[in-house]
Image 1 (cartoon, helix red, strand yellow):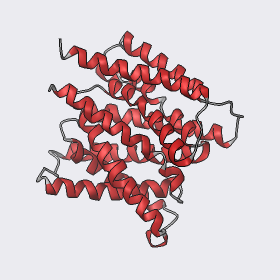
Image 2 (tube, rainbow, N blue to C red; image 1 turned 135 degrees about the vertical axis):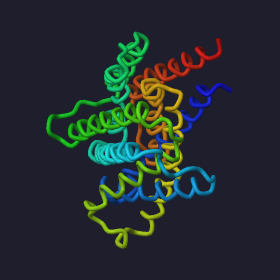
Image 3 (cartoon, rainbow, N blue to C red; image 1 turned 120 degrees about the vertical axis):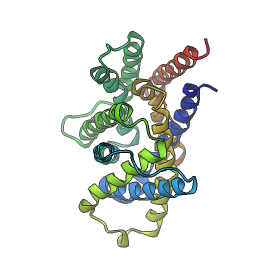
Length: 288
């Protein structure tokens, strides 16, 4: 199996798990920042045990790499806080949709880092994605929670796209678990000074949900996602990840009884089409 094809498998598994992450914004009775701090700490500890068990390297190669890890951790921390805040304000479906402007953001800002112009196919896929997202967003009045949630989701999208590009350009020499260990721990440490509910006051139920969110829905998919960026561009990863809101909507329907509308299904179909096209195009290049 070619490395690019293996990376695609990693990416699709990660996206499926990412889709379930959104549910914890509603299931855990904490604010977005507290969820981020505890979730990131749990994920970092889980990844550390994985690295020790597999006898893999933990140290980075240079002081410069530690500074990059610090920057990436702070960036992913902001992304997570705004991601959960957007869904808490606007609801899971709308919050995830707003966040999924990030593939389009990635397509337009990545060329500034590598000196290339955006590819026509990526731009067309981005147009399909943004049209699908537009169909999913209901009418919102200016100034209400839905609008604020959408704006917060777009901010989260920018930080996630920026993090992916910087990771790809300056940090992709490290394996997925190693990179996410530093990013999760940095995010948790940087934000821990702002928590509102100390861990001693967190309910047993929420602790259990945080453990699930941290280990299964954070450590695992983020490690796989980071690993996939070794052989896939951030644009390709972003466009394929557009399956995430569909997984999230489906899981929200099953567990939270959120009913998707006809426009949701139509917009989702457009997003899936773009994602599968990217998967097919990458696979085709390396099988010819």
